[in-house]
Image (tube, rainbow, N blue to C red; front, top):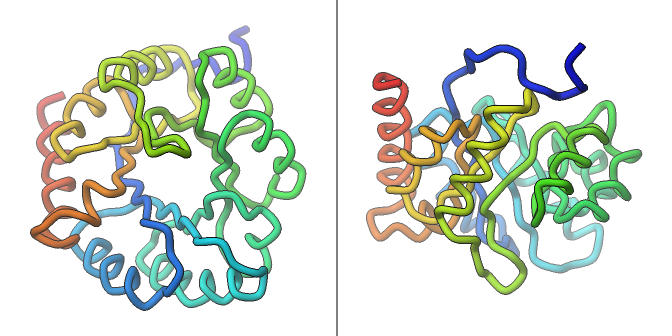
Length: 220
């Protein structure tokens, strides 16, 4: 019998987009950008990054954006703030690193999504999966805004996709990285600044991201 989480079926669903917002202090700004992106592409989830504030303010920020995201058919996932998830109506949380993930797991499961990033070793990724992560993410920026190299992220995604059933998210620092991440086997493609800071606007950037996924899907 295969170990828990080991991939046994070679066919995989088509990859989908996972949007990562800038840090949100005033929801009015990102609401317009999110709405444009959600209209332009099929988005599986939105990672909401919240600027520091008291709990009531955090809950209110999430509540103001949750209907926009969820009515578009996407899951709303908070970066951290496990204690706010249920009160604000979010769908889950994304935790940075194995320690933070393990500490938050009991509060999230089984009702909410528990994703894990900040995984610097293959061993940590496997431990997170065994502990019950709904997905693992590779390539996102660290606290200093630094990313692993593109080759390192592609290598990690390809390794995971070949072996494990639990979905992996590949983080694209630029829209032209989407193709390689999909080819490596990412189940979801996370796009953050590359979309929200695109000079053409989030609608055009999301449309390009969707087009790249569609092209990659038809050529695999």
